[in-house]
Image (spheres, rainbow, N blue to C red):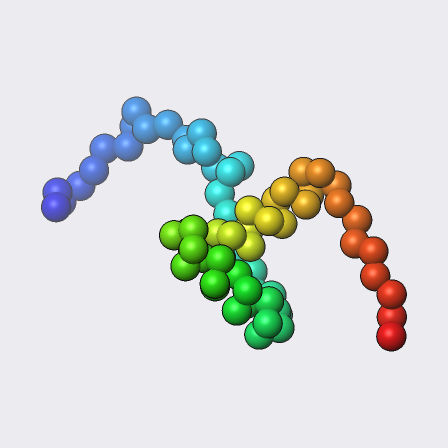
Length: 69
């Protein structure tokens, strides 16, 4: 490692708006198990699968239809 670094010609990260934000979310164990089993099939992490699914819902502006029982 150098003792000092020169950042005078550095550029801002062009991908800063695409970074993910860490949050805490409570999911039931059945939902986590489902995405973990999909993760084993696909080779992706279950967190990425959940993110991809939610991003797809947001992109398509899907609305949840549910009834209280």
